Length: 138
Image (cartoon, rainbow, N blue to C red; front, side, top):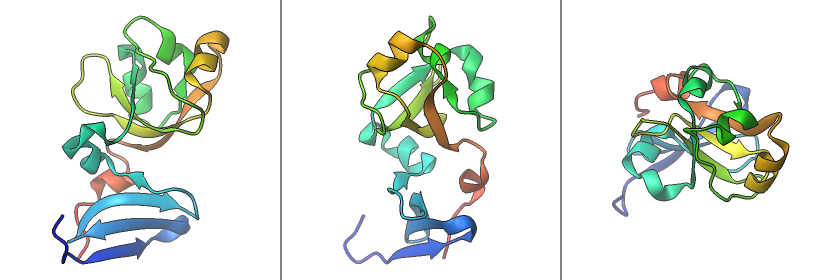
């Protein structure tokens, strides 16, 4: 990002703020929460967030906005990497190259393996949601 590019914060409905540079949507947040990278930024720079991988059976649910359940992270085909609770993560899918969604760990990875019940990761932004369909802002 060149030094002189204009950085703007765009305020949307429902207390959403989007940080843009040259019209490109880079980060977003809700209320006074942390800024999360958009999936478009994550697809360009895949290693800015730690990854977690879901199995093939979870893909359609994640793409419809569902939270990621613990069994989808511990079954064969899924890969659960060490991460603390409240960590922002990229959700990858078995056999897919790009991230499906951006999420927040609701439990630590160790707890997900032990409990194996309930919501493991909260789905914040996923492919084909409203933010994904916003192209650029000028």
